Amino acid sequence: MTPRWVLHVDLDQFQAAVEVRRRPELAGLPIIVGGNGDPNEPRNVVTCASYPARKFGVHAGMPLRTAARKCPDATFLPLDTAAYDEASEGVMSVLRDFGHPVEVWGWDEAYVGAEVDSPIALAEQIREVIAGATELSCSVGISDNKQRAKVATGFGKPAGIYQLTDENWMAVMGDREVDALWGVGPKTAKKLAGMGITTVADLATGLGAGLRSIEYVVAAPDHGSERPRRAPSLTASSIATCAVISVSGRGMTTRGSTSRSRPRNSQPPSTY
Ligand SMILES: [Mg+2]
Image (cartoon, rainbow, N blue to C red; front, side, top):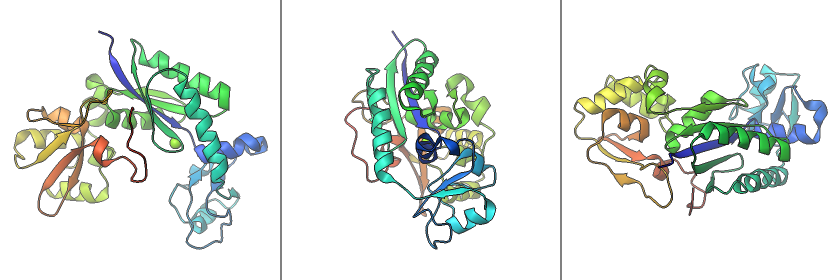
C-alpha cells in the first residue's frame, strides 16, 4: 500500500513577500506590514515582519510602535488585503493543480494529503512549482497527521522541508517544552507545569503513567472523510504526538487538532 502523508505548506513571510514581489527593491530589507503602515499609529500591530526585520526582534502581533523602536530603519507598509487575497488564490490554485486534496487554512497555509512513496520529492516539487508560478517561497512540513505536519514546518522554515515521523518525533520533540506542540499555549503550559509536566516527553510519560481521568479524542490521521475519533487505547507517545490539549480549571481534556485548531472563521473543510 502506498503510504499516506499530510504535507503542511506554509508561505514564508507571506505579506512581506507579496510586497517584495511588486517592489523588488525591497528584497532582503527589513519590512514590517501592519495597520495603515504608520509606525506611530497606536493600537495597531505587526501582521508580518520580513526575516531581516525579525533579526531585530520584530514579530507578528507586536505593537507597531514597539517594532519601530526595535527596527527604526524598516520599511513600514499598510495591509493590502486585496493583494494578499489574490496572491493566496494564485498559490492555492497551483497547489490544487497537483491533483491531491487541498485544505486551505488561511492566506498562507494549506494542507495537502497525498498517497506517495516520496513525500519529500513531492514537497520539493511543490516548493519549486509555487516559486516558479508565483515567485513566492514556502516551507513544507511532512507527517502523518496535521498536528505533526504543522510542527514540522517550523523546523523547515524558511524555504525548507522537514519530516516528522514516529521514528524521529521523540528525538526531536521530547526535550522541548510542551508549548512546542501546536495548540498548547502559555496557559496550558502553566497548568501542566503545575502537574510536573514541562516537556513533551513528560507529557507522553505522564499521560501514559496514570493521569487516568483525562478524556481525550485524538484525531485520526487526517485522510479523506475520516473524522476525529475517540481512541480508547492509545500509547502515551501517540497521545503526545496527536493530541491538542486544553486544561480547564476542573480537569484536563485533550481534543483532536481538527476540532480545536481550525481558525474560527474558516469554513469546515470538505476535503483536506
Ligand atoms: Mg506563513
